Amino acid sequence: MLSRVSVRLGIVFGLIIFFTVAVSYFTQVRFINELLLKGIRQEIGRELKLNRLMLETKPANWHVQGAPDSLADTIGSVLDLRVTLIALDGRVIGDSYLSGSSLGTIENHRDRPEIQEALRSGYGENIRYSDTVRENMLYVAVPLGNSDAYAVLRFAKPVRDIGALEREVRKGIEAALFWALFLSLLAGIITAFILARPLQRLADAAEKRLHGDFRGVIPVHRNDEIGKLARGINYLSDEIRRNRRQEEWYRAVFSGIREAIIVTNASGEIILVNPVASRLFGIENAIPASRPLKTLSDSRLQEIIDDVHENRSTLLREEVSLGTSKGNRIMQISSMPVLKEGRSEGTVFVFNDITKLRNLERIRRDFVSSVSHELRTPLTSIKGYTETLLEGAMHDPEHAVAFLQIILKESEQLTALVNDVLDLSKIESGRISYAFAPVDLCGVVNRNLEMLRPAIDKKGIRIECNFRENLPDVCADVSYLDIVVRNLLDNAVKYVDDRDGRIRISVFSSGDEIVMEIDDNGIGIAPADLDRIFERFYRVDKARSRQLGGTGLGLAIVKHIVIAHKGHIAVRSRINQGSTFSVTLPVFCAELKKENG
Image (tube, rainbow, N blue to C red; front, side, top):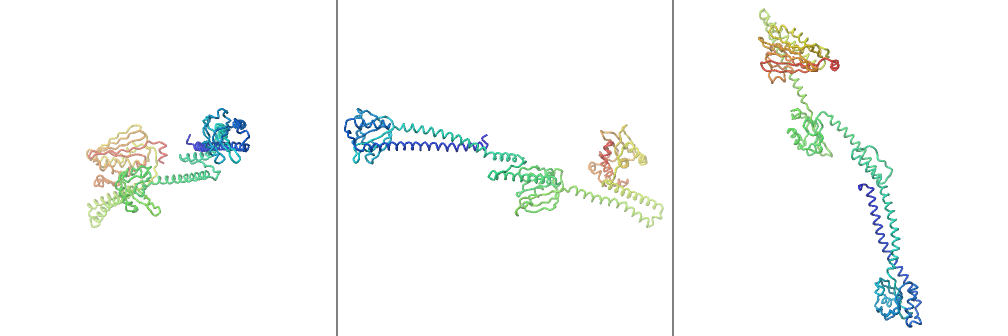
């Protein structure tokens, strides 16, 4: 409660008024006391001078016993004062407070201050305690006589009478001051609340803005300091809202950038990162304060940033391999200094992950190299045998037929290679429109087994089919599903032994999917080759593959077709114990067909 400005202003105003009234009270009481004493002195002085004029000539009966005392009693009763007549030798010859018989017992007044001053200057005054009447008295004395004094006339008034009058006056002053204090305090409190009301509105508005609420505008209807303060708060609120909007836009743009961005200050400490950099380099996204470079997990990255700051250099698309949360990635780094008034305030580092681009370039180079190699082999063979025939072997019927059969075989291999390259190109480019429909996978397997029956019978391969009954249809394009099954069966036929070859084909359901497994007891695949078996032109046994007419593209084509069918393909194998290829395809439904287009 005491924290409110109105209360504190009221207390301040109250204290000021209280101390002002208190000082005024004590000052006025002292002034009134002096004023009352001065007035009484003047009144007694006037009375004393009047009686002095009346007694300027010594009365005829002055020397009569008791006459001065009677005169003092008469004057004292009229003026309600203590009147004393003192001879020049200091004897008291008359006193209105004492009887005539007791005058002889009073000590001599020759040494009284007021008597001495009256005889010396014609007027004497003193305030002191009277042993005779036992209280404080105000004494005023004048000499009597026209030219030569014959006595001293002294008036005295008890100080308590002055105090009583003073108390009466003080009561009136205190009552007036009390009401003045009460009304002043009331006016001060009201004034404080009136003055504090606009301040309270400003404080409430400032509190809202402190907690992020910038709605509304403080009304300004005055041109004083409070009005200026209100206009200032409104202006700052508008600026903060504008800056917040800009910050939100910048943050949205900054967060939406796909490249990793790290911002450092002039000391080389990290002060800002975007979400991509936070994920890649393990830096906290919302950095409350600058962080040293040692928080970076990759030492190479620390060295690069340190080198830029120390040498004040600039990087432009420098490619570096850095360790990230995704493993080693090839980063293209660019840096740009942040300059302010010609001084460097920091540096912005942009990291562009070009790993995929470089891999694609490598794949493209490998593809061109592989295609060139695959094309060169049959073309070289065709050219060699053709030249041999032209040199005269064509006239040797036995050799001519053999050479022509080789040329035909190489031509067929070349044709198969070109067809596979074209098919793979169309599949990878997404230019194929699949006609998805319900397909009986078991029927596709049986149909392709019949197509490969001559090769199977020739090698004496044992075929084992394990088809579950009442299997639902798969969602597939039957022509491309034929390519998948035919390639997998053809590979199994090619790589099993001629004497005890065995191929086991299983088709079964697993949830909403149909699984086809083709298991053989062929030469198998080494563990190092399993991750690359679906790459283009990758062969486990290149010589045997080429001898058997393989192009090295069959499994790559199978993988892309299965992926296009929302399926999955995997392989398990052991050297000299065979391989198992598993293809998983979704069960046909209208929604899936619509999704696949």
